[in-house]
Amino acid sequence: MSVAPHIKEQMSSSSFIRKMFEEGVQMKKEFGAENVYDFSIGNPDLEPPAKVKEMLVTLGHSDIPGMHGYMPNAGYPETRAAMAEKVSKEQGVPVDFSHIVMSVGAAGAMNSVLKAVLAPGDEVLVPSPYFVEYGHYVRNHGGILKPVPTAGDFSLDLTAIESALSPKTAALIINSPNNPTGKIYTKQDIASLAEILEKHRKTSGRSVVIIADEPYRAIVYNNAAVAPVFPVWPSSVIVTSFAKDLSLPGERIGYAAVNPAAPDASELIDAVIFATRILGFVNAPAAFQRIVAACWNEPVDYSLYESRRNTLMSILRNAEIPFFEPEGAFYLFCRVPESRKTPNKNDDRAFCGHLKKYHILGVPGSGFGKEGWFRLAYCVPERTISGSAQAFKNAAGEW
Ligand SMILES: Cc1ncc(COP(=O)(O)O)c(C=O)c1O
Image (cartoon, rainbow, N blue to C red):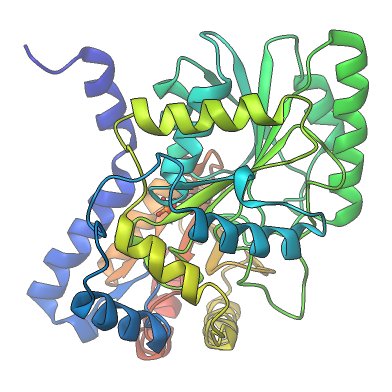
């Protein structure tokens, strides 16, 4: 036996999104792509800004000495400076290049930060439902993920968070706009969260690190704003990437930004850089560091996602499938409708299996820690959404 038992266990319990994705590929071959409504995966279908391609061409023809060589583990100083400008604007506090560590996507940044802050047995809180990979990332570094249910509208349940804090709590992950719900936490909730953590710090002596996972920060509707964490809680780190806002998930480019006000900021930055090295990332992809330094501020028309959201919401209303209206990101979190055939049957896995018969692919909410719900990713072509209307109606009618 060569595969460790705990890895086997993790593989079998959590590969459902990928499984859906692969089933989708198979179904498209069998029934034709236009007859399959694949809402399974958050792979943005908008093309990256034109400047990304122009920069790729320019870089391909350039002969900057050493452009394919190793670099400092934290990344190119010019790229870090550009990211610092971005973070300063978003957070409303001055951040300089030394607080930025370039990473292999948001996932790479999250792993480096967790590696830096977790001791074996430490706990990490996360409002639930949550991005399924967090459990693995925390376990990678000897930690224990503790999901804390959110309120009925998916806002932070501050009382539940307060009761979940313990002397073992090392970090709290917040993800706003949220995957899978599309919820954006209010400025007031973030301020109250900081107050709770300060109270906890005074009694336990431990300053819990907020890790704000923000790959969807730019994708918001109705001019919503994502509240910054740096001004209210010093022990905080942003992890993010250009996977969603610039549609570059395959290029694996992101960064971690450490709050300059953190009590041990420079030690924490050094630890995140060290973790980037010893986890084997070594540094973020070289070419895309140059590209995002030049393209991070390119305008992108996210209203396309908004119109897709609106189309899908009206299809779901018509099919009498209840959902939470997303404030950002590109996911619709839906409640399994009342079954006409078997009352009280709200099994999300069974419902996603039922949807498949109508060629609709969605992801069961239990994978995100929320039974009785399912997620639809609407970063798909408009025709996939409009084409799915009858299928949703039939599926809900026959449930
Ligand atoms: C909430 C959240 N965090 C992190 C990631 C990972 O992002 P990346 O591809 O940049 O590693 C994703 C990807 O879907 C996500 O939804």
